[in-house]
Length: 266
Image 1 (cartoon, rainbow, N blue to C red):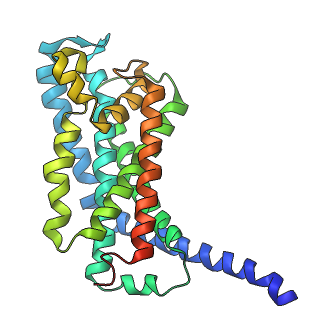
Image 2 (image 1 turned 135 degrees about the vertical axis):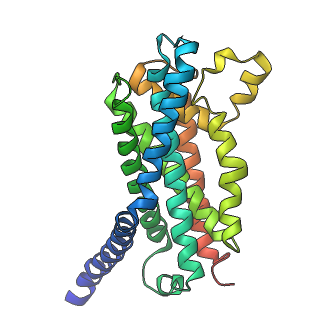
């Protein structure tokens, strides 16, 4: 009887240790190669602020009732969170597949959903660290108004979860390193640039506005911007509903792929 009572506790402890191991490994990896994970986004953001904010922004004037550099700052922060959350998981999980040490996780007693959460947590950590870095860069160029802290935190966390899951799924299907760069290059980057990072979609013709509403990144950028500036091109409640729906759907798909062993036992 004592053994049966101790078994669930022992299993929970095993799961927790396994989860911790994945997250700590991801965290140490991020810090170990900080020159690849944290420095490039800071340099890129600096260039964006100099070129778009200072040089072009001075000619554009105000947007959404704010200075142009203030307006694009939340979008640039969110753009860095999106690309780095995605990039961390896709490179890490595919690296585990390529290095053949994914088998150690597959034969472990860890449930598949916890493995997914472990890698996603790593993506969230990198996304938040990079987001914080870019925020510091932004403060060197402009003043960031904070309208609603809770919305800012919720928006960045859910967005990071969505793209961490997207990176996980990409890594499952990828057959080589070219496959993990194809989606970010040809789909993710255009969607990000057309997601309202640098402009308000109210400036677009009606057909382009309608097309923009099919881009999920538009809702993520605007919900995040609303948390700072209190302005948005979309209904913030709808934006969060869409983000949560994407997060749940992608999590379900990621766990399903793990359960079926698709792309993992080839």
